[in-house]
Length: 187
Length: 242
Image 1 (cartoon, helix red, strand yellow):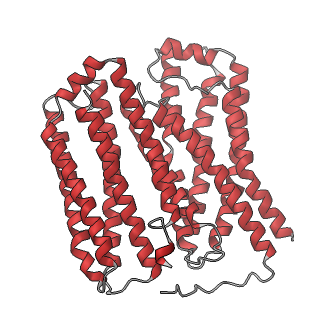
Image 2: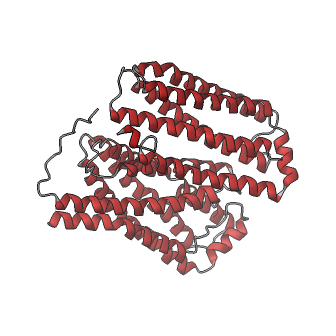
């Protein structure tokens, strides 16, 4: 039965994921449009960001996605509990991501580049904030996944919920990669 | 069956609300809405043009909210059929009830603006802020209703014949969360997050309208399915095969 299924997780989560991607497509469009209107101002705003923090955050999320994928694989093994450390590691990465974002926000705001100082900073704070809200929801989802792998064997429903949670987390990662490219790198 | 027919009427209240509400907004020329960064003078001119049409459109919007109550009940009655989903069912009902108020109150405020558009523009501008911030930022009741619906639907673990399809649960959660960022409008007078912005206003207006219609279609189908089942016996939660 499992081998027949092509789509990971529940079909419904893909509605959520694709819907969210449509909304973020609007967000990305707004960024590209804003840069097109005034490339110099966009570049100026970009110059105030710490690209190092952005890169570390990207690596953190990519690592978390890798851990989640490894966790899903481990959960299908003889003892699903072996998936636990992978998911806990992913939660650790997500917490580190949120902590670095807090450092970045505080630093930008205290050096006079707060959300209201330019159009770029307005978009930077609100769009990364919107993404951070996704990370927060993702933390709750990963917490639920950790609870699922308390037992050595998962029933079909739990296995599906685990894949559903993992799919959501990969989306959070994917959205950040595009956001990172548009905010920090687009030159 | 009488009960089925009454429930179907309640379900049809959803599209009735959407049609009447958005027609009212068009008649009152609130699409696009007045802009938050207009001067007081410009805001006053907006309310002074076609004041009777504005009063009429706003009255239609107010009338449309009456449909929210029966629609909320139609959703509630289906959620209540899901084994174990009593708490989310009542949560959704509470959200629907307060949601009606969340639309009525800002509409009444706009009616107050429209009553005396010749007043001091500064006052009209203040009243416009007072009306539009709650009008666009009224996410808590909508989120509560969406969460109640989403959680309730996802509690239905039966693969065969769930009361409402599981994807509707994810769709409800997604829509609910997307109402949240509207809060940002209190920080900005222009741009994508302002009360007339693409993300705070247009996206939410489209999602909200779409949500009501999708929920209507599914609730209507669920009512018909229940009516077609001869014995509405409480289905025992089946053991999911391992």
